[in-house]
Amino acid sequence: MTQQIQTPRSASGVASPMHRPGLVLFAAVMMFVVSGFLVIVSIAEWSNSFWLYDKNFTVVGNHLAFWGFVDFVIACVSAYAAYMLLDGRRVGQVLALTFAGVSAIRWLFYIPADPWLALAIIGIDALVIYGLTAHDEWFSRTTI
Image (cartoon, rainbow, N blue to C red; front, side):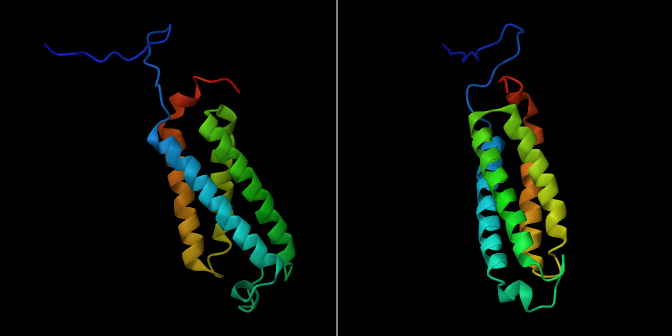
């Protein structure tokens, strides 16, 4: 005698997932990790750290304080999007996809200053985008 495990079905007959997909959890955790990276980078930029300042690398002149505030705001948006992803909200998915795209483009500017850190964050952003687009149907079950 074999047992069948039945998945709950919605009114439309589509199977509704009972738990968060693994790639969505991965994307949320990576958003928190990148948020932590950005907080550290913003602190380094506010203090005119030598890993950026001493290399004569300028993005907006020598105004690293400007980039420090930009990175801090992006870190806050990243942490908020990660929290909303864990809650299963569509707005979290939209914010996370927007953040990951903008962050990847933004870190392209830092490749001359610190190529390994920039490439690592660009890779994490690419994995976040993949994880969120692979399970788009999970976000359609909730409202904003």
